[in-house]
Image (cartoon, rainbow, N blue to C red; front, side, top):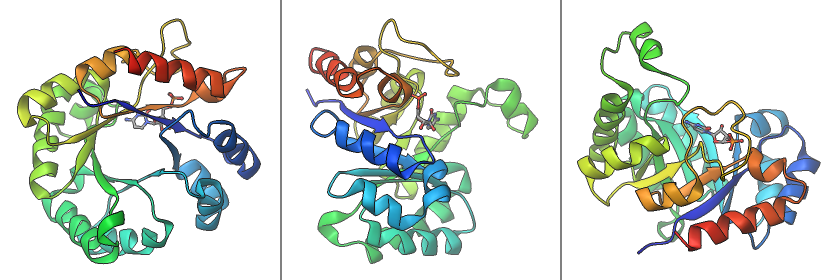
Length: 234
Ligand code: C5P
Protein backbone atom coordinates (compact mmCIF):
# COMPACT_ATOMS: atom_id res chain seq x y z
CA UNK A 1 0.00 0.00 0.00
CA UNK A 2 1.25 3.51 -0.76
CA UNK A 3 2.53 5.61 2.10
CA UNK A 4 0.64 8.72 3.18
CA UNK A 5 3.07 11.63 3.29
CA UNK A 6 3.19 14.54 5.74
CA UNK A 7 3.15 18.24 4.85
CA UNK A 8 3.78 20.76 7.65
CA UNK A 9 1.84 24.02 7.18
CA UNK A 10 4.16 26.85 8.26
CA UNK A 11 1.49 29.49 8.83
CA UNK A 12 3.32 32.66 9.82
CA UNK A 13 4.16 36.10 8.44
CA UNK A 14 7.67 35.87 9.85
CA UNK A 15 10.65 34.85 7.74
CA UNK A 16 12.69 33.92 10.81
CA UNK A 17 9.89 31.79 12.22
CA UNK A 18 9.27 29.99 8.93
CA UNK A 19 13.00 29.31 8.55
CA UNK A 20 13.32 28.02 12.10
CA UNK A 21 10.37 25.65 11.67
CA UNK A 22 11.62 24.42 8.29
CA UNK A 23 15.06 23.65 9.72
CA UNK A 24 13.70 22.01 12.85
CA UNK A 25 11.47 19.76 10.75
CA UNK A 26 14.14 18.55 8.32
CA UNK A 27 14.00 14.78 8.11
CA UNK A 28 10.63 14.66 9.90
CA UNK A 29 8.25 15.92 7.20
CA UNK A 30 7.95 15.19 3.48
CA UNK A 31 7.15 18.77 2.40
CA UNK A 32 6.45 22.22 3.81
CA UNK A 33 3.42 24.34 2.99
CA UNK A 34 3.55 28.11 2.61
CA UNK A 35 0.52 30.09 1.57
CA UNK A 36 -0.95 33.57 1.23
CA UNK A 37 -0.09 34.69 4.75
CA UNK A 38 3.65 34.17 4.30
CA UNK A 39 3.86 35.05 0.60
CA UNK A 40 2.02 38.37 0.88
CA UNK A 41 4.11 39.35 3.89
CA UNK A 42 7.52 38.28 2.63
CA UNK A 43 7.40 37.90 -1.15
CA UNK A 44 8.51 35.24 -3.57
CA UNK A 45 12.23 35.42 -2.83
CA UNK A 46 11.53 34.59 0.80
CA UNK A 47 9.66 31.47 -0.33
CA UNK A 48 12.85 30.35 -2.03
CA UNK A 49 14.92 31.11 1.04
CA UNK A 50 12.70 29.10 3.34
CA UNK A 51 12.13 26.20 0.97
CA UNK A 52 15.73 25.74 -0.21
CA UNK A 53 15.88 22.17 -1.48
CA UNK A 54 12.84 21.10 0.52
CA UNK A 55 9.71 20.05 -1.40
CA UNK A 56 7.33 23.05 -1.30
CA UNK A 57 3.54 23.01 -1.31
CA UNK A 58 2.76 26.55 -2.49
CA UNK A 59 -0.88 27.06 -1.55
CA UNK A 60 -1.99 30.28 -3.27
CA UNK A 61 -5.41 28.98 -4.48
CA UNK A 62 -5.49 30.79 -7.83
CA UNK A 63 -8.96 31.70 -9.14
CA UNK A 64 -9.37 34.10 -12.08
CA UNK A 65 -10.00 34.06 -15.82
CA UNK A 66 -8.07 31.30 -17.64
CA UNK A 67 -5.43 33.60 -19.14
CA UNK A 68 -4.65 35.27 -15.82
CA UNK A 69 -4.34 31.98 -13.95
CA UNK A 70 -2.13 30.56 -16.70
CA UNK A 71 0.17 33.60 -16.62
CA UNK A 72 0.23 33.56 -12.83
CA UNK A 73 1.35 29.94 -12.79
CA UNK A 74 3.97 30.73 -15.42
CA UNK A 75 5.33 33.51 -13.20
CA UNK A 76 5.62 31.03 -10.30
CA UNK A 77 7.62 28.49 -12.32
CA UNK A 78 11.10 29.64 -11.15
CA UNK A 79 10.14 28.78 -7.57
CA UNK A 80 10.11 25.08 -8.40
CA UNK A 81 7.19 24.24 -6.10
CA UNK A 82 6.26 20.56 -5.86
CA UNK A 83 2.53 21.14 -5.36
CA UNK A 84 0.38 24.14 -6.42
CA UNK A 85 -3.29 24.97 -5.89
CA UNK A 86 -6.05 26.50 -8.01
CA UNK A 87 -9.82 26.63 -7.32
CA UNK A 88 -11.87 23.97 -9.14
CA UNK A 89 -14.84 26.38 -9.13
CA UNK A 90 -12.95 28.51 -11.69
CA UNK A 91 -14.33 26.01 -14.22
CA UNK A 92 -12.94 23.61 -16.82
CA UNK A 93 -11.46 26.30 -19.12
CA UNK A 94 -9.49 27.79 -16.22
CA UNK A 95 -8.27 24.39 -15.06
CA UNK A 96 -7.27 23.39 -18.59
CA UNK A 97 -5.37 26.67 -19.01
CA UNK A 98 -3.54 25.96 -15.75
CA UNK A 99 -2.62 22.49 -17.03
CA UNK A 100 -1.28 23.93 -20.29
CA UNK A 101 0.73 26.61 -18.49
CA UNK A 102 2.38 24.02 -16.26
CA UNK A 103 3.17 21.73 -19.20
CA UNK A 104 4.66 24.65 -21.13
CA UNK A 105 6.54 26.54 -18.40
CA UNK A 106 7.85 23.83 -16.06
CA UNK A 107 10.63 21.35 -16.90
CA UNK A 108 9.13 17.89 -17.56
CA UNK A 109 10.96 16.21 -14.69
CA UNK A 110 10.02 18.94 -12.22
CA UNK A 111 6.36 19.53 -12.96
CA UNK A 112 4.41 20.34 -9.83
CA UNK A 113 1.31 18.42 -8.83
CA UNK A 114 -1.59 20.64 -9.93
CA UNK A 115 -4.21 20.49 -7.18
CA UNK A 116 -7.75 21.81 -7.44
CA UNK A 117 -9.45 22.97 -4.25
CA UNK A 118 -13.00 21.62 -4.33
CA UNK A 119 -15.21 23.16 -1.62
CA UNK A 120 -13.52 25.16 1.14
CA UNK A 121 -13.93 23.36 4.44
CA UNK A 122 -15.22 26.63 5.89
CA UNK A 123 -18.36 26.33 3.71
CA UNK A 124 -21.23 24.21 5.02
CA UNK A 125 -24.66 23.62 3.45
CA UNK A 126 -25.86 27.11 4.40
CA UNK A 127 -22.70 28.69 3.02
CA UNK A 128 -23.18 26.91 -0.31
CA UNK A 129 -26.87 27.92 -0.43
CA UNK A 130 -25.83 31.53 0.10
CA UNK A 131 -23.79 31.43 -3.12
CA UNK A 132 -26.55 29.72 -5.09
CA UNK A 133 -25.49 26.07 -4.78
CA UNK A 134 -28.19 23.67 -3.58
CA UNK A 135 -26.06 20.50 -3.65
CA UNK A 136 -24.71 19.14 -0.36
CA UNK A 137 -21.03 19.86 0.32
CA UNK A 138 -20.22 16.22 -0.42
CA UNK A 139 -22.11 16.21 -3.75
CA UNK A 140 -20.44 19.47 -4.72
CA UNK A 141 -16.97 18.14 -3.85
CA UNK A 142 -17.49 15.07 -6.05
CA UNK A 143 -18.91 17.18 -8.86
CA UNK A 144 -16.00 19.64 -8.80
CA UNK A 145 -13.50 16.83 -8.30
CA UNK A 146 -14.71 15.06 -11.42
CA UNK A 147 -14.67 18.30 -13.41
CA UNK A 148 -11.16 19.20 -12.24
CA UNK A 149 -9.71 15.78 -13.05
CA UNK A 150 -11.32 15.76 -16.51
CA UNK A 151 -9.92 19.24 -17.20
CA UNK A 152 -6.36 18.21 -16.36
CA UNK A 153 -5.76 18.58 -12.62
CA UNK A 154 -3.49 15.98 -11.01
CA UNK A 155 -5.29 15.97 -7.71
CA UNK A 156 -7.65 17.58 -5.24
CA UNK A 157 -7.64 19.23 -1.86
CA UNK A 158 -10.49 17.85 0.23
CA UNK A 159 -11.51 17.29 3.82
CA UNK A 160 -10.98 13.86 5.33
CA UNK A 161 -14.70 13.11 5.15
CA UNK A 162 -14.62 13.42 1.38
CA UNK A 163 -11.77 10.98 0.72
CA UNK A 164 -14.08 7.96 0.52
CA UNK A 165 -16.72 9.51 -1.78
CA UNK A 166 -13.97 10.84 -4.07
CA UNK A 167 -12.24 7.46 -4.20
CA UNK A 168 -15.61 5.81 -4.96
CA UNK A 169 -16.27 8.25 -7.80
CA UNK A 170 -12.77 8.71 -9.24
CA UNK A 171 -10.68 5.75 -8.07
CA UNK A 172 -6.96 6.01 -7.36
CA UNK A 173 -6.18 8.62 -10.04
CA UNK A 174 -6.50 11.86 -8.07
CA UNK A 175 -3.68 12.80 -5.70
CA UNK A 176 -5.66 13.62 -2.54
CA UNK A 177 -4.25 16.25 -0.18
CA UNK A 178 -6.10 16.50 3.13
CA UNK A 179 -5.95 19.23 5.81
CA UNK A 180 -8.01 19.25 9.01
CA UNK A 181 -5.89 16.55 10.64
CA UNK A 182 -5.59 16.23 14.39
CA UNK A 183 -3.60 13.53 16.20
CA UNK A 184 -5.67 11.99 19.01
CA UNK A 185 -5.56 14.15 22.11
CA UNK A 186 -4.57 17.44 20.42
CA UNK A 187 -6.62 20.64 20.21
CA UNK A 188 -9.04 20.91 17.24
CA UNK A 189 -8.56 24.74 17.18
CA UNK A 190 -11.00 26.13 14.55
CA UNK A 191 -11.16 22.92 12.50
CA UNK A 192 -14.53 21.20 12.62
CA UNK A 193 -14.41 18.07 10.48
CA UNK A 194 -11.24 16.42 11.66
CA UNK A 195 -9.63 13.00 11.40
CA UNK A 196 -6.52 11.53 12.97
CA UNK A 197 -3.48 10.86 10.76
CA UNK A 198 -4.19 7.14 10.97
CA UNK A 199 -7.83 7.53 9.90
CA UNK A 200 -6.88 9.76 6.97
CA UNK A 201 -4.20 7.28 5.85
CA UNK A 202 -6.63 4.38 6.09
CA UNK A 203 -9.23 6.33 4.10
CA UNK A 204 -6.71 6.82 1.26
CA UNK A 205 -5.10 10.25 1.63
CA UNK A 206 -1.89 10.67 -0.38
CA UNK A 207 -0.74 13.65 1.68
CA UNK A 208 -1.96 15.12 4.96
CA UNK A 209 -1.45 18.78 5.85
CA UNK A 210 -0.81 19.50 9.53
CA UNK A 211 -0.22 22.97 10.92
CA UNK A 212 -0.69 23.92 14.55
CA UNK A 213 -0.36 20.42 16.07
CA UNK A 214 3.25 20.60 14.80
CA UNK A 215 4.13 24.30 14.85
CA UNK A 216 2.62 25.02 18.27
CA UNK A 217 4.02 21.89 19.91
CA UNK A 218 6.73 22.29 22.54
CA UNK A 219 8.95 20.17 20.28
CA UNK A 220 7.76 20.46 16.62
CA UNK A 221 10.20 17.81 15.36
CA UNK A 222 8.98 15.30 17.94
CA UNK A 223 5.35 16.08 17.08
CA UNK A 224 6.06 15.50 13.38
CA UNK A 225 7.96 12.29 14.12
CA UNK A 226 5.01 11.00 16.15
CA UNK A 227 2.65 11.70 13.24
CA UNK A 228 5.01 9.90 10.85
CA UNK A 229 5.06 6.90 13.18
CA UNK A 230 1.24 6.90 13.22
CA UNK A 231 1.14 7.07 9.39
CA UNK A 232 3.67 4.25 9.09
CA UNK A 233 1.55 1.98 11.28
CA UNK A 234 -1.79 2.79 9.58
O1 C5P B 1 -3.19 24.38 11.87
P1 C5P B 1 -3.98 23.48 10.97
O2 C5P B 1 -3.52 22.03 11.02
O3 C5P B 1 -5.47 23.61 11.16
O4 C5P B 1 -3.62 24.01 9.52
C1 C5P B 1 -4.20 23.45 8.39
C2 C5P B 1 -3.63 24.07 7.17
O5 C5P B 1 -4.33 23.59 6.04
C3 C5P B 1 -3.72 25.59 7.12
O6 C5P B 1 -2.57 26.05 6.44
C4 C5P B 1 -4.96 25.84 6.30
O7 C5P B 1 -4.89 27.04 5.55
C5 C5P B 1 -4.95 24.67 5.35
N1 C5P B 1 -6.23 24.32 4.78
C6 C5P B 1 -7.33 23.96 5.55
N2 C5P B 1 -8.52 23.66 4.93
C7 C5P B 1 -8.61 23.72 3.60
C8 C5P B 1 -7.50 24.07 2.83
C9 C5P B 1 -6.32 24.37 3.47
O8 C5P B 1 -7.26 23.88 6.77
N3 C5P B 1 -9.74 23.39 3.00
